[in-house]
Image (cartoon, rainbow, N blue to C red; front, side, top):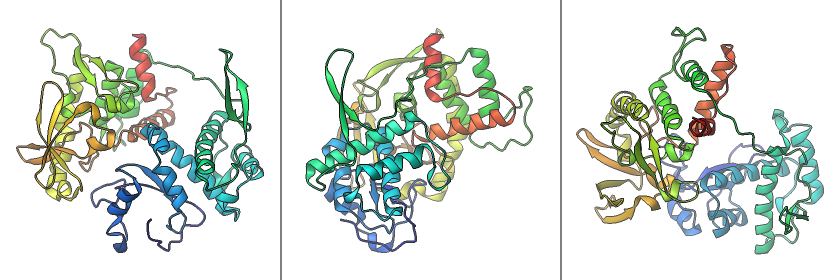
Length: 408
């Protein structure tokens, strides 16, 4: 159990990731001195590296909340779902705290009031959310409170369930408060000319007239353009492309046809599979590696950032069958399959180059650190905002490029 730490955090519960208190991790934050054994306590609870968890507003720990995040049931969720559930639960627990209600005492009436605040009268200036968004929150709260009820922490869940009949005649259970205005997935795509305009304006720093924008201050445009082109020319999902290792990039073909790569099991949606990428996509990636990425690595090496990473593992060899020989900080050698490496595992892999160690992951932040694949969502969001500001009525999201690839 984590120590308490006084903090003026208001009513908001705090979201953290296990192992995120790294001096060189731009997504973490500085841990208080008395948390020197934090990693050992996270391990004792079963919070492996990268697992999200919540602390109370004053940074004290609630053991039942922590045990939920360490539970096998939570572990079975996909990493993106884990983070989404953690944030949805955080918002509801923060609301309860603001009302002076202990979460163990929450009732259906509290949830009904919360629904009103989320859908009609936003909390603390937040935007009104859609039925689809609230349905996702309900799924997270159902998962959390059902687990707490089954574990004996509470006697009754505030999320009341009802039965419903599926199309195949079987019955299932869903939240009684589930909105009726939940929209089905709207599949969209871009045509080549439309994609080129969005790419140049949103990511490349051009105006709607195709001229360089003198006010453009983008420093990662080489990386962002290469990533978008990689999705456009391969049909990979955001997580699949965003967690690629350098050793997983396929070699270009001399005949100019598509090159074949492989998506590892631990980061694929479903099972491991092959993917194909065009030579144009590989050329964009090579350009990024030789320019923007190389400069980021040099800056990080000069600042000694890679030497501060806890749990760093050096890739000493990659076999043709996808087995990696890895050396840990104590010099111990182990062998692991590419298929077993999660997104968090990949962030701690390094290779030794001519100038020293560098990340084994392809995509890096400006500071030279491995880029979390979730970051791409904000990159595309910023590109859409830029297009809107310049009068270009085009919006694009990573998964749209997958559909665009399939359409072509």
